[in-house]
Image 1: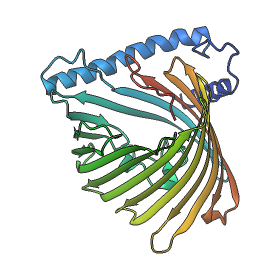
Image 2 (image 1 turned 90 degrees about the vertical axis):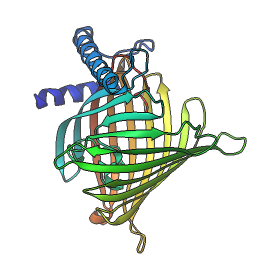
Image 3 (image 1 turned 30 degrees about the vertical axis):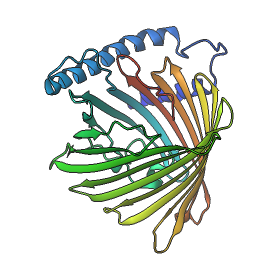
Image 4 (image 1 turned 60 degrees about the horizontal axis):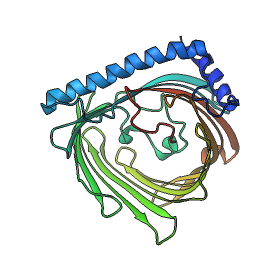
Amino acid sequence: MKPMIAVLCVGVCFTALNPPALADEDSDLPEWAEEHVEPIRAQVGSWVDNTSRNIDAFFGGGDTATIQNDSYLRLGQELDWMEGDGTSGDISLRYRIDLPLTEERLRLVIESDPEESQGTLADQGSGRLYNDQRDRSTSTFGLDWLERRDKRETWSNRIGAGVRLRMPLDPYVRFTSERLWDLGEGPWQLESFNRVSWFNNEGYSARTTWDIGRPLSDTHHLRFITTVQWREEEDTLEFSEVAQLNHRLNDRSALRYSAIAIGESASNPRMTNYYLQTRYRRDLHKSILFGDVIPELHFQREDSYDPRWAMTLRLEMYFQRAIQRDYFEF
């Protein structure tokens, strides 16, 4: 089955690079494929929605029919190639079950791949981390307490606790704080995301991200992102700098150009990887099926900064009764 899906992934990504000329179309799929995709999407999306609402009603004890629910299931297929390492492929499944309780500030959340399980900044930074580099036994079940604050006006904080669903169970506690500033009267904005976590099996971790950006036009957006991360398990301070230009080609296609530098260690800072990346993303079918093509050129310290090419082809499909968010975004 994997070879068949891999062929489909290549074919769809090729279609993404050669979209139909009709700008008002909302799908690149042929009619026969659409006839197969739509019933599956509707059936699985309804199941995801009904399941999450039933669980929510059990814990919350109220009517959940009129409450917005952001639960989703994402099925992905990825082909990953790195010069000198060959090609690998994988199928991935990611889910988030959102269960808003009776109290508006308390949310019961079940999700896979929490941020703390996504490896080092070198693994995360390229956007190519998607398959076997992640720990698949990282689903979490917990409660988040939310402050009803506008992060444009003051710090918005969130406290969460729960368990990682693997044996033995791995309790965790995390604190998250966010803030967004408008810089002066101009278009620049500065956003800060900060998180401190503790997992019983892995210890403490801390991460801070500062993102400054501005729109250059209706279709272009410039960003500079600084991230610093420390994980007790690695016992290394990591940092990354990203310069990013996003270009919205049309309602269904976008390009992202990135220059990234990654380093580590506070006592003896050193750069471990520089790379250039272009990411093309295409909405292949009605905002539920997406294709990504991601070429990269790496200059890694372990390879004496000799250039190495990499390429990722990715296909992902979202299952949700009604689309509640813009999955087109990078």
